Length: 122
Image (cartoon, rainbow, N blue to C red; front, side, top):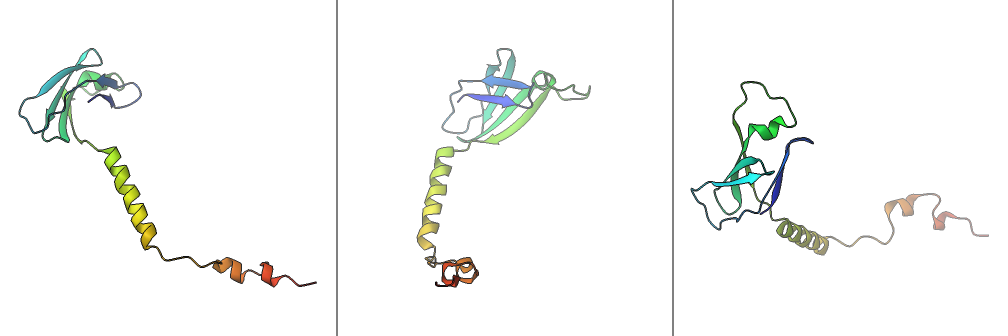
């Protein structure tokens, strides 16, 4: 897994590669992000993680108050974009199959005075 922590335009940090475990583990994975910050990842499941980011990353973009914590913690769920795309396409096809057939002419065409049927014949 590769990634980028993006808090604002100035506070960014790249990281990776990280091997995503197949099951939950108690061990915290520590890596160096942005070549200078220690990031901590804890995987709860294959798709859930907790990320601890030092306040130095946040301070790049914003001045923090003196009582700010030493680390900021974020929790996230990995989204499978390919699977979501397939589900959306499958739902669209199912909706298209179940949709009633449309009439040949719309309500506007049948009731508008400028339609071809309302034109005088010469």
